[in-house]
Image (tube, rainbow, N blue to C red; front, top):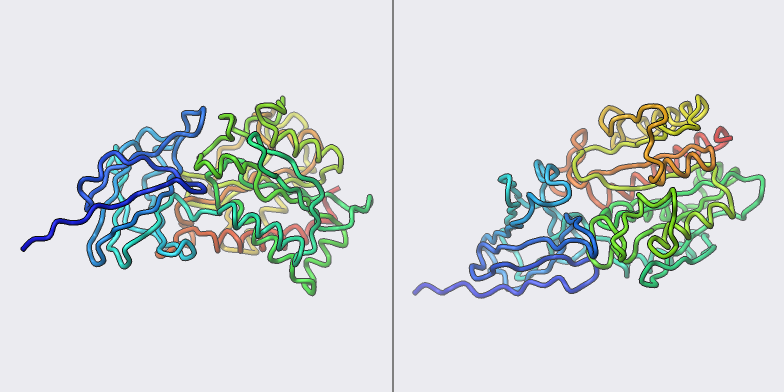
Length: 383
């Protein structure tokens, strides 16, 4: 006797969840779609939970609108991530046929979570802030509010002495780029190590100003690119509107209050399977001093870790042609400081691939720790 497969229960009504069920009548091949960001046409991020899997059977999930996503070329070479416990994430076989993205799983348990990348939950964020104060020696210097009223903590590691350089690192302006907050967790974990000689040198000469999540509304709602108002925060730094992008308004307000001697904006890139940085070479105020600092940063970090490279990345801007709405360019110009966007992949790092996890939260954390070594090596050269 043939037993008909049982129906699957698919849901995304949770923190960073995003999926629409189109047809689940065949539990071995389910048709789905990614929902766009609120008040925006952007979409790419997905995250959903499946119950009712048949252990030992292969289930397939098709994202039928993948070819219409914001970065449809990014699906080539991409593999979705899955987890049975929301702690250990692994890549699953994935194909893109030019129209739909399909990934499959031979079930080992009756339930599973799938996502575009290893998610960083709001609950984990809250624990991160608590631990930063308790174990990393940070203070919550100020708290901004998102468009929907969620807290945006600004952490400071250091005593605020006027002689010290002000080093700013912000993350997850684009809410679907969850690797950015994993990176910040790595930074905060390393700050727990009081006996670290590189950290002691860094903190002798600089204070760290950290915003681990710039876009909590977008992250909670499962957005790829925008806040709750449909605003891309990384296109809001030139003429900041406190109503449309209060998150950026808060960050700039605090930067003007305390000053900036270095700025890192942490992101993830959908298409490029490498870690890289983009600088301010197109800014009207770009100088030989800043070019030298950029080279110093890149050279040291590429020696510090094989996960950073300088061959692949974005095309360089022509002189005077920078997009000044971007955080990196705007902050670099306003404060005449070393200012970089650091990008991590959603896929894998082709120079150092990992067949099980691809690029992951763990590797993002380690990169954050390695960046602190680079900052320590050059902290006295920033001004």
